Image (cartoon, rainbow, N blue to C red; front, side, top):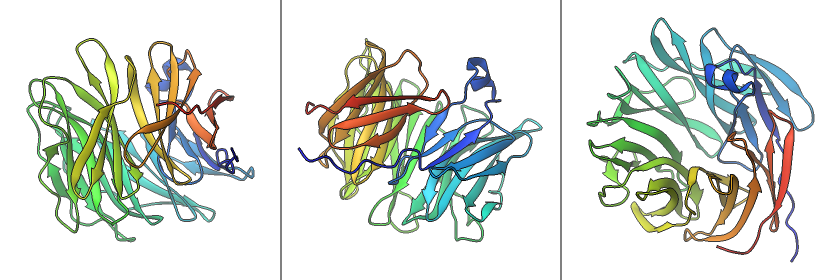
Length: 345
């Protein structure tokens, strides 16, 4: 079989000092990979300053203010956009940075309406930042889903996508579909178990939150979204009473289709990644311990799979992939592993 041209390895890496509490305990930074784009963009979380590296070896420094921690990154034309949280005086606010070869600029702050703001999501359309979404509220159990458009100069009015639930709302993710509509997905505790909810905006109005699947008594958590031909693919973990196992569903024309179980027992923390016209899901497996990579078809089936054994729970970066081989890397540890993509579900 003819091999496809490999994807560039770590075309841009955002390196940050590992000073936040979670990573400091492990002594290493955590890699967060941008979910879409032909080049790999990685965020190593930390604070106070960042080094943006290109594959050619170019480097420039992004300086952060006291209490700031970057949490997510996406590619835009000519550079990247990153968002994070600033903790100060018992409150958390969101900030957004845009970086390219000319330097880094700080976008205007999103209007503060609650003391707690978490889980920023950057929404990019055709290489441009167009909106952001996040969770905010007076405390972890009173979070709302919020969103605001970006016009290139300032943020528009803040919309409430979902009001507080009887419990928590977590795991917010989202993207702009090929038709220009916007899809947000998150996990919500309804007082009995966690369900996966979504809201879809075709023009200016967000739809009322609905469940992706009919209500059940099983916890559904950690959703991740990626683009697929004509829509989106969603992956999440469901607890079946014994183990967490990976599920997927496809979004087409405003409806969810083809929901199915694809993961082995103990499959957790999926990330859907779009790369070079294909869709991949990278997730953690408990036994054997490591990371599984699945290539997905437009209908939501898995046609190729690879596995990399790893004792560490640090999420790897999908550095490169072709028709038969995948490379995972842990840039914070200087480790890289190649595995064969096998033609099996």
